[in-house]
Amino acid sequence: MIKQDDPSLTPDFYDRVSHKDVLFFYMKHPGRLIENMKYAAANSMSIRPYYLGSYEKSEGKPPGAVAGMYSGWSELKNKHLPHSLGFLAVFYLVYYAGVLYQYFRTKEVAGRIAGELMMLLGLIGLFSFLVPILGDGRADIGKHLFLFNVCFDMMAVAMLGWTLHKLTRLLK
Image 1 (cartoon, rainbow, N blue to C red):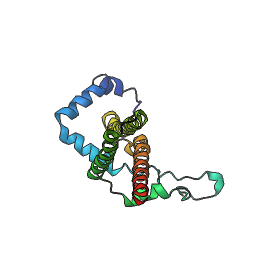
Image 2: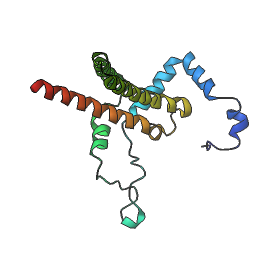
Image 3: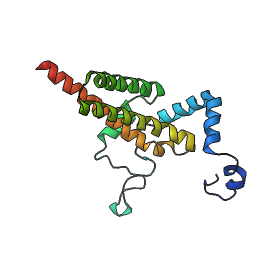
Image 4: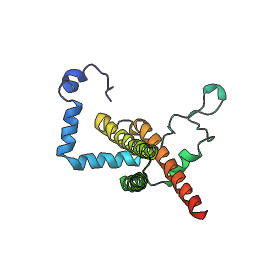
């Protein structure tokens, strides 16, 4: 294993390969990008580093022990949601279908701005999914997908809230 900041990497690698080179590589080899996206999707629903543990030594817990308090949503995502690129694609399609539906039906400026912010949230999630692949490949991908997890969670809450709002209006 070679550390990322090892000085020997500068002349052998960093001086020869840039992020632009990596981007062009993936443009020429989209299958490799898709494979890395599948790998990222498989690691995208877990934000808890189970291999590290979550207690201080002073707590007297064995090394690697993980606290279960306040972890319901994380455990639900990690154990019950599909970890596939197809699931994420369907999730994004449903999200954007709802946002665009609401956006084009709204005539008020505030509603339009809200729709644009919701679309921006999805774009931030998309970029935060792709940038770690381009920047670091598979290295610590779960850790680098934290912002994607935040956006995914916010999108899921927004979808649930919008659905509940529409159902309550329908029942009235």
